[in-house]
Amino acid sequence: MTKAFTTSMIGMLIEEGLLSFSTQLQEIFPEFQRQDAQANITLEDLMSHRTGLAPMDNLWFNSYNEILVDRSQAIPILSYAPVAGPFRASFNYNNIAYEVLGQVLEKVTGLSYLDLLHQRIIEPLKLNRTFYAGEPLDGNTAKSYAALADGSSHQLSPWGYGDNLFIGAGGAIRSSVNDLLFLYNALMDAANSQVWTATTTNPFKQVPELLEGKVGVGSTSLREYSYASGWIRAQLPAMVHLFADYWPPVLLEGGESRLMIHHQGYIMGNAGIVSLFPETSTAIVVLGNSAGLTDAMRLFGQVLIATTFENEFNPTTYTNLAREARDYFVQYVGDRNKELLANKTSRESINPLPAYVGKYYNSISSFFIEIKLNGGKLQVSFLGADIDTYDLQPYQADSFFWILDFDESAKRARLPWFPPEYFVLKFGCQYEPSWWQFGKEADMRCLTWKHEFTIPGEGEVFRKEAENHRVGGVSQRPGSQGRMDLK
Image (cartoon, rainbow, N blue to C red; front, side, top):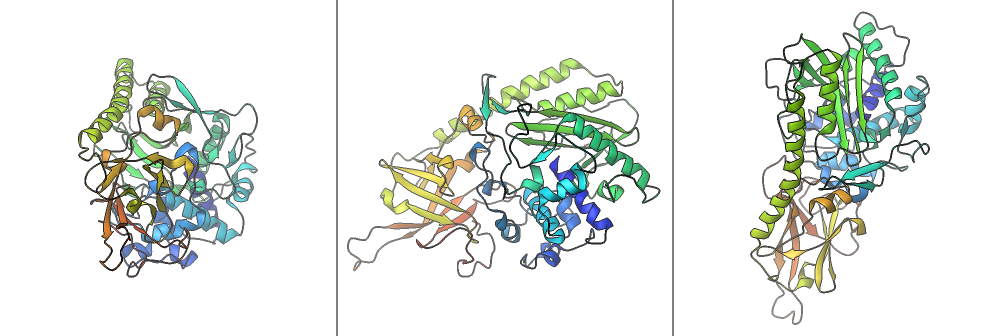
């Protein structure tokens, strides 16, 4: 839901002539450099997730709701991210695009995202339970929880706080139902009035254009199902299935045609869904401090929508879906771990363990994987952080894996449903000492990790670098030219 705040502020700057929908990213940030069609990415492309670039979420999503990547890495990551779909013709959800949009707002205005949010939205609308990237307002602010496999809860640290928060413009605003209902009423008023005239008495500008569909998201019927700018459009009745791992019931089946502008958000311990019906100025908001073991926000939201518009629905269908989804998610993790263990063919590593030790960097030095030797066993430590350190076991040939059960994933605030390949590190580029280098051990100089599943292949190659290499540096491997090193 934060994304709609961000696009709304972009709309205000467009209204003032400081930006346009067609402003190219490289006009604002000349350091954004690509050698393909994506070099022409515009603000509209970023807002509508039609850049065609892979999302690269696993390079910033860390355990315990902490984010270790610095904001300065957003443009370099967007510059090197591989293409996952046709430019302006495919929907590829991209959180980093919204981090970049937040930085566009800051660079053009000279103000921080937080100050802009207060000046442009919070203060004009007199919102008193809405805050950004900060500690809880008071004791009446909901805590965050994860659901364990047995249905019990585990308290989590809140996501999204800090002065230099990466992805803040894509998901770090927290609010209340009352504040959001007031805000969305003002947004719909602006949208309806601006269809006929640009005059409006509230801060929202360019709303009809922001709510216009830009790219399809895969409709199961001939009705519209598209992504706008921070919003999803669906012409009901329809199956609203985006981001679902199952087929939800047709929403408002048998009812009259209605345009729904909606979005949902999910981060461990924070979940919500917003559905707007501009033709009747109706807003439905569902917020939660845990998603439970199923897609509760979506299902409960659909029930509320059907009830609001007096559309008949079968409660048993929804309860059965919730139970099936709960059982599936828990069972999937167990089955995945069984598959990993079943495919394990090595009891010991091929090379001495010190051969694997070191820091392995991606081609733009924005991320590294550290392999440590601790108590005679290897560990992997993403970005060298203790919070993301895992014990490794030999897997196949020169590969190792780690394993997480459902409850440990939940307690770490990590999404549990990654496929088996995600947990495997494949080592290569073996350096063998020459005969005159007596006493020097073999050394593994690269590893491959499959962390991005929108592109084919075995994964991204990370290469071992010298001791003085540091994340955030400008050095690149010879010939890399800032491109992602894929295998």
